[in-house]
Image (cartoon, rainbow, N blue to C red; front, side, top):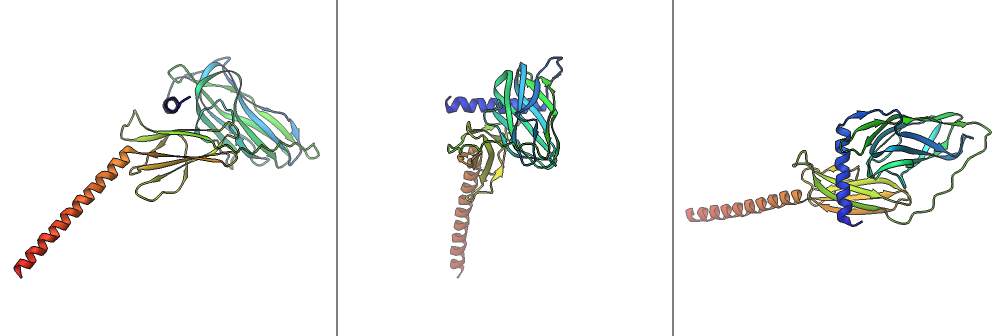
Length: 297
Protein backbone atom coordinates (compact mmCIF):
# COMPACT_ATOMS: atom_id res chain seq x y z
CA UNK A 1 0.00 0.00 0.00
CA UNK A 2 1.49 3.36 -1.02
CA UNK A 3 1.62 6.40 1.26
CA UNK A 4 -1.22 8.20 -0.52
CA UNK A 5 -3.59 5.23 -0.12
CA UNK A 6 -2.55 4.76 3.48
CA UNK A 7 -3.11 8.42 4.36
CA UNK A 8 -6.51 8.34 2.64
CA UNK A 9 -7.52 5.38 4.78
CA UNK A 10 -6.26 7.13 7.91
CA UNK A 11 -8.37 10.18 7.12
CA UNK A 12 -11.46 8.10 6.37
CA UNK A 13 -11.04 6.13 9.59
CA UNK A 14 -10.53 9.32 11.62
CA UNK A 15 -13.80 10.80 10.39
CA UNK A 16 -15.46 7.43 10.89
CA UNK A 17 -14.39 7.55 14.55
CA UNK A 18 -15.53 11.16 15.00
CA UNK A 19 -18.89 10.52 13.36
CA UNK A 20 -19.44 7.17 15.03
CA UNK A 21 -18.76 8.29 18.60
CA UNK A 22 -20.73 11.53 18.21
CA UNK A 23 -23.92 9.79 17.31
CA UNK A 24 -25.76 7.06 15.43
CA UNK A 25 -28.63 4.68 15.86
CA UNK A 26 -28.65 1.94 18.45
CA UNK A 27 -29.67 -1.62 17.60
CA UNK A 28 -29.98 -4.66 19.82
CA UNK A 29 -29.73 -8.08 18.22
CA UNK A 30 -30.85 -11.29 19.90
CA UNK A 31 -27.85 -13.13 18.51
CA UNK A 32 -25.49 -10.24 18.04
CA UNK A 33 -21.72 -9.94 18.41
CA UNK A 34 -19.86 -11.19 21.47
CA UNK A 35 -16.79 -9.83 23.25
CA UNK A 36 -15.03 -12.31 25.48
CA UNK A 37 -11.81 -13.19 27.32
CA UNK A 38 -9.57 -16.20 26.84
CA UNK A 39 -6.63 -17.52 28.84
CA UNK A 40 -4.60 -20.71 29.05
CA UNK A 41 -4.95 -20.80 32.85
CA UNK A 42 -7.81 -20.93 35.32
CA UNK A 43 -5.88 -21.27 38.60
CA UNK A 44 -2.41 -19.93 39.43
CA UNK A 45 -0.24 -19.20 42.41
CA UNK A 46 0.71 -15.71 43.64
CA UNK A 47 3.62 -14.36 41.61
CA UNK A 48 2.48 -16.16 38.46
CA UNK A 49 2.45 -14.50 35.05
CA UNK A 50 -0.17 -15.27 32.42
CA UNK A 51 -1.91 -13.81 29.37
CA UNK A 52 -5.55 -12.78 29.02
CA UNK A 53 -6.79 -12.02 25.50
CA UNK A 54 -9.84 -9.96 24.54
CA UNK A 55 -11.53 -11.26 21.39
CA UNK A 56 -14.57 -10.62 19.23
CA UNK A 57 -17.06 -12.80 17.38
CA UNK A 58 -19.48 -11.07 15.00
CA UNK A 59 -21.76 -12.04 12.14
CA UNK A 60 -22.10 -8.31 11.40
CA UNK A 61 -19.31 -6.25 9.75
CA UNK A 62 -17.86 -4.12 12.55
CA UNK A 63 -15.81 -0.99 11.79
CA UNK A 64 -15.47 0.61 15.25
CA UNK A 65 -15.64 -0.39 18.90
CA UNK A 66 -15.83 1.28 22.30
CA UNK A 67 -15.17 -1.07 25.22
CA UNK A 68 -14.26 -0.79 28.88
CA UNK A 69 -12.58 -3.64 30.73
CA UNK A 70 -12.53 -3.93 34.52
CA UNK A 71 -10.06 -6.05 36.48
CA UNK A 72 -9.22 -6.36 40.22
CA UNK A 73 -6.32 -3.93 40.61
CA UNK A 74 -5.83 -5.09 44.22
CA UNK A 75 -5.12 -8.68 43.15
CA UNK A 76 -3.24 -8.41 39.86
CA UNK A 77 -0.98 -6.10 37.86
CA UNK A 78 -1.37 -5.57 34.13
CA UNK A 79 2.30 -5.58 33.16
CA UNK A 80 1.74 -4.83 29.48
CA UNK A 81 -1.10 -4.24 27.04
CA UNK A 82 -0.18 -5.77 23.68
CA UNK A 83 -2.08 -4.63 20.58
CA UNK A 84 0.06 -6.58 18.09
CA UNK A 85 -2.14 -8.09 15.38
CA UNK A 86 -5.27 -6.33 16.63
CA UNK A 87 -8.32 -5.98 14.40
CA UNK A 88 -8.28 -2.33 15.49
CA UNK A 89 -6.29 -0.26 12.99
CA UNK A 90 -6.55 3.18 14.58
CA UNK A 91 -6.85 3.58 18.35
CA UNK A 92 -8.81 6.59 19.54
CA UNK A 93 -6.59 6.43 22.60
CA UNK A 94 -3.79 4.01 23.41
CA UNK A 95 -5.04 1.39 25.92
CA UNK A 96 -3.83 2.26 29.44
CA UNK A 97 -4.38 0.82 32.90
CA UNK A 98 -5.34 2.93 35.92
CA UNK A 99 -5.48 2.56 39.71
CA UNK A 100 -9.21 1.81 39.65
CA UNK A 101 -8.71 -1.21 37.38
CA UNK A 102 -10.35 0.09 34.19
CA UNK A 103 -8.96 -0.08 30.65
CA UNK A 104 -10.65 1.73 27.76
CA UNK A 105 -10.44 0.07 24.33
CA UNK A 106 -11.70 2.41 21.64
CA UNK A 107 -10.83 2.61 17.96
CA UNK A 108 -11.67 2.06 14.30
CA UNK A 109 -10.96 -0.63 11.73
CA UNK A 110 -9.64 -0.05 8.20
CA UNK A 111 -11.25 -3.30 7.12
CA UNK A 112 -14.61 -4.17 8.78
CA UNK A 113 -14.30 -7.33 10.88
CA UNK A 114 -16.78 -10.15 10.40
CA UNK A 115 -16.04 -13.60 11.78
CA UNK A 116 -14.85 -15.36 14.91
CA UNK A 117 -11.84 -15.04 17.19
CA UNK A 118 -10.73 -11.56 16.18
CA UNK A 119 -7.94 -10.33 18.47
CA UNK A 120 -8.48 -6.93 20.11
CA UNK A 121 -5.71 -6.86 22.75
CA UNK A 122 -3.74 -9.15 25.04
CA UNK A 123 -3.03 -8.38 28.68
CA UNK A 124 0.20 -9.66 30.22
CA UNK A 125 -0.77 -10.19 33.85
CA UNK A 126 1.08 -10.79 37.11
CA UNK A 127 -0.83 -12.30 40.04
CA UNK A 128 -0.04 -10.32 43.18
CA UNK A 129 -2.37 -11.52 45.95
CA UNK A 130 -4.56 -14.53 46.66
CA UNK A 131 -8.20 -14.23 45.63
CA UNK A 132 -10.53 -14.54 42.67
CA UNK A 133 -9.64 -12.26 39.76
CA UNK A 134 -12.64 -11.40 37.62
CA UNK A 135 -12.14 -9.82 34.21
CA UNK A 136 -15.34 -8.26 32.95
CA UNK A 137 -16.59 -5.77 30.38
CA UNK A 138 -18.55 -2.79 31.68
CA UNK A 139 -19.08 -1.29 28.21
CA UNK A 140 -19.50 -3.25 24.96
CA UNK A 141 -20.42 -0.81 22.18
CA UNK A 142 -19.76 -1.94 18.61
CA UNK A 143 -20.56 -0.03 15.43
CA UNK A 144 -21.71 -1.66 12.19
CA UNK A 145 -20.21 -0.81 8.79
CA UNK A 146 -23.59 0.23 7.38
CA UNK A 147 -22.81 3.86 6.50
CA UNK A 148 -24.73 5.13 9.55
CA UNK A 149 -22.55 3.88 12.38
CA UNK A 150 -25.39 1.88 13.90
CA UNK A 151 -24.47 0.81 17.42
CA UNK A 152 -24.74 -2.74 18.71
CA UNK A 153 -24.44 -3.75 22.34
CA UNK A 154 -22.35 -6.93 22.31
CA UNK A 155 -22.90 -9.74 24.75
CA UNK A 156 -20.04 -10.61 27.09
CA UNK A 157 -19.03 -13.07 29.77
CA UNK A 158 -16.51 -12.51 32.58
CA UNK A 159 -13.35 -14.56 32.94
CA UNK A 160 -12.43 -15.87 36.39
CA UNK A 161 -8.86 -16.72 37.39
CA UNK A 162 -8.31 -18.17 40.87
CA UNK A 163 -5.12 -17.09 42.62
CA UNK A 164 -4.43 -19.79 45.18
CA UNK A 165 -1.43 -20.08 47.53
CA UNK A 166 0.42 -23.31 46.75
CA UNK A 167 -0.92 -23.53 43.20
CA UNK A 168 1.69 -24.04 40.45
CA UNK A 169 3.47 -20.91 39.28
CA UNK A 170 2.60 -19.90 35.75
CA UNK A 171 5.06 -18.01 33.56
CA UNK A 172 4.96 -16.34 30.16
CA UNK A 173 7.85 -16.57 27.69
CA UNK A 174 10.04 -13.51 27.52
CA UNK A 175 9.24 -11.53 24.37
CA UNK A 176 11.84 -11.53 21.62
CA UNK A 177 13.55 -8.16 21.34
CA UNK A 178 11.95 -6.16 18.51
CA UNK A 179 14.68 -4.19 16.74
CA UNK A 180 12.48 -2.89 13.92
CA UNK A 181 11.15 0.68 14.35
CA UNK A 182 7.36 1.07 14.14
CA UNK A 183 5.50 2.30 11.08
CA UNK A 184 4.31 5.91 11.35
CA UNK A 185 2.35 7.81 8.70
CA UNK A 186 0.67 11.18 9.27
CA UNK A 187 -1.00 14.08 7.48
CA UNK A 188 -2.52 17.42 8.43
CA UNK A 189 -6.22 17.43 7.49
CA UNK A 190 -9.02 19.98 7.72
CA UNK A 191 -12.17 19.28 9.72
CA UNK A 192 -15.31 19.17 7.54
CA UNK A 193 -17.16 20.65 10.52
CA UNK A 194 -14.81 23.58 11.17
CA UNK A 195 -12.42 24.45 8.33
CA UNK A 196 -10.48 26.79 10.63
CA UNK A 197 -9.35 23.88 12.81
CA UNK A 198 -6.72 21.60 11.22
CA UNK A 199 -6.01 18.17 12.67
CA UNK A 200 -3.12 15.74 12.51
CA UNK A 201 -4.34 12.28 11.52
CA UNK A 202 -1.76 9.55 11.99
CA UNK A 203 -1.36 5.79 11.97
CA UNK A 204 1.24 4.06 14.14
CA UNK A 205 1.60 0.29 13.91
CA UNK A 206 4.08 -2.45 14.72
CA UNK A 207 3.54 -6.08 13.82
CA UNK A 208 6.14 -7.43 16.23
CA UNK A 209 5.73 -5.70 19.60
CA UNK A 210 2.77 -3.36 19.11
CA UNK A 211 2.61 0.37 19.78
CA UNK A 212 3.38 1.50 23.30
CA UNK A 213 3.13 5.29 23.06
CA UNK A 214 2.60 8.09 20.54
CA UNK A 215 3.84 11.62 21.25
CA UNK A 216 3.74 14.99 19.55
CA UNK A 217 5.55 18.29 20.05
CA UNK A 218 5.23 21.58 18.21
CA UNK A 219 7.42 24.52 17.23
CA UNK A 220 5.80 27.95 17.26
CA UNK A 221 8.94 29.90 16.43
CA UNK A 222 12.40 28.38 16.75
CA UNK A 223 12.14 26.31 19.95
CA UNK A 224 10.45 22.94 20.32
CA UNK A 225 7.81 22.53 23.01
CA UNK A 226 7.66 19.51 25.32
CA UNK A 227 6.61 16.05 24.09
CA UNK A 228 2.98 15.23 24.93
CA UNK A 229 1.27 11.87 24.60
CA UNK A 230 -1.45 12.03 21.93
CA UNK A 231 -4.00 9.91 20.08
CA UNK A 232 -5.19 10.39 16.52
CA UNK A 233 -6.66 12.79 15.48
CA UNK A 234 -4.89 15.70 17.22
CA UNK A 235 -5.95 19.35 16.76
CA UNK A 236 -3.09 21.59 15.61
CA UNK A 237 -2.39 24.31 18.16
CA UNK A 238 -2.73 27.90 17.03
CA UNK A 239 0.58 29.34 15.89
CA UNK A 240 2.29 25.97 15.35
CA UNK A 241 4.17 25.79 12.04
CA UNK A 242 6.24 22.64 12.57
CA UNK A 243 5.06 19.44 14.26
CA UNK A 244 6.97 16.33 15.21
CA UNK A 245 5.29 12.97 15.84
CA UNK A 246 6.98 10.07 17.58
CA UNK A 247 5.79 6.46 17.81
CA UNK A 248 7.38 4.09 20.33
CA UNK A 249 6.83 0.33 20.07
CA UNK A 250 6.73 -2.24 22.85
CA UNK A 251 10.51 -2.66 22.75
CA UNK A 252 11.27 1.06 22.91
CA UNK A 253 12.19 1.51 19.24
CA UNK A 254 11.15 4.91 17.86
CA UNK A 255 10.05 6.46 14.59
CA UNK A 256 9.74 10.24 14.16
CA UNK A 257 7.95 12.13 11.41
CA UNK A 258 7.96 15.90 10.84
CA UNK A 259 4.98 17.80 9.45
CA UNK A 260 4.70 21.43 8.38
CA UNK A 261 1.48 23.40 8.82
CA UNK A 262 0.91 25.64 5.77
CA UNK A 263 -1.52 27.72 7.82
CA UNK A 264 1.10 28.22 10.54
CA UNK A 265 3.85 28.97 8.02
CA UNK A 266 1.70 31.61 6.27
CA UNK A 267 0.90 33.25 9.60
CA UNK A 268 4.57 33.29 10.59
CA UNK A 269 5.56 34.75 7.19
CA UNK A 270 2.95 37.49 7.50
CA UNK A 271 4.19 38.30 10.98
CA UNK A 272 7.81 38.41 9.76
CA UNK A 273 6.88 40.60 6.77
CA UNK A 274 4.87 42.91 9.04
CA UNK A 275 7.84 43.08 11.41
CA UNK A 276 10.25 43.91 8.58
CA UNK A 277 7.91 46.59 7.19
CA UNK A 278 7.47 48.06 10.64
CA UNK A 279 11.24 48.04 11.20
CA UNK A 280 11.92 49.71 7.80
CA UNK A 281 9.29 52.39 8.52
CA UNK A 282 10.71 52.94 11.99
CA UNK A 283 14.21 53.36 10.56
CA UNK A 284 12.95 55.79 7.92
CA UNK A 285 11.05 57.81 10.49
CA UNK A 286 14.15 57.85 12.65
CA UNK A 287 16.33 59.07 9.77
CA UNK A 288 13.86 61.81 8.83
CA UNK A 289 13.58 62.92 12.43
CA UNK A 290 17.35 63.01 12.71
CA UNK A 291 17.68 65.13 9.52
CA UNK A 292 15.03 67.58 10.68
CA UNK A 293 16.75 67.86 14.01
CA UNK A 294 20.10 68.65 12.30
CA UNK A 295 18.46 71.30 10.02
CA UNK A 296 17.03 73.12 13.03
CA UNK A 297 20.50 73.24 14.51
